[in-house]
Amino acid sequence: MNFVHTVLVSTATACIALAAPHAAHAHGVDGPRENISPAFQTPIANVPGKTMTAIVVDYKPGGVSPSHRHGQAFVVGYVLQGSIRSKVDDGEERVYHAGESWTEAPGVHHMVSENASKTRPAKLLAIFVADDNDKNLVSWDKK
Image (cartoon, rainbow, N blue to C red; front, side):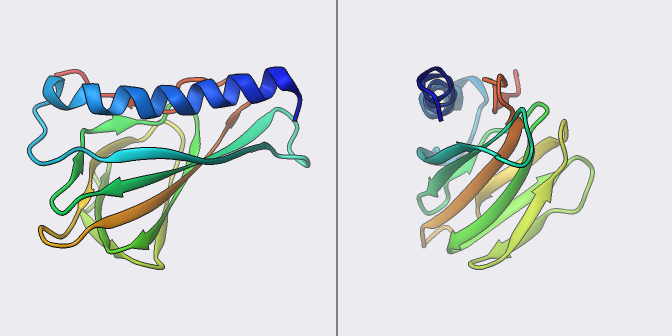
């Protein structure tokens, strides 16, 4: 990975992490907000022009994320710990447990993303496959 690419992807990951806490009040979210940490990023060698970026999303008991979109990124969610409640577009709300995963097509609306438990923490690995120059991996809904 070259220096410029490293800086761009690191900046995109930092933007996700920095924007998340400030979105809570603007979106009327009830419950503690998630904590987002970068995990890794790498160009995909056999898919020119695409980068894989991963973040770890930690939810305190009762923790929530505002509704959002991931632009043109393909997303895989994998539950590392606890249980995550998720709803995409008009689909059914579903609870995923540790070891389970789901995918999100580019452009879908992630309506619900939260810890399904009010008493135990939960942790999610979110993996984004996006264009190398895509810096906006999360767009929080405006209320």
